[in-house]
Image (cartoon, rainbow, N blue to C red):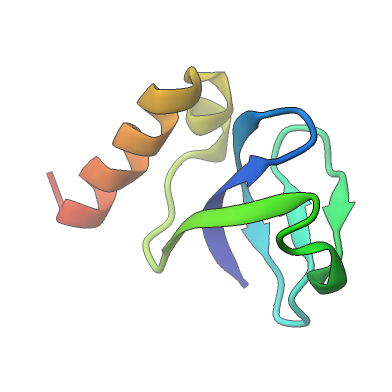
Length: 77
């Protein structure tokens, strides 16, 4: 399992979530599951991270700020 930032293509929103070992994406906010077969149709993974961010903080941050937040963590700042 890895922590991710993904775009919900139907809603146009950027979300924090989890990429499960079987390829399923789970939204960190609502728990909605996106199956691997829906990739490119319903969601696009923007960033994966080996380091773990506080998901509660990540959920509260607005779209671009959320991406910047994870970028900062990945750079170790």
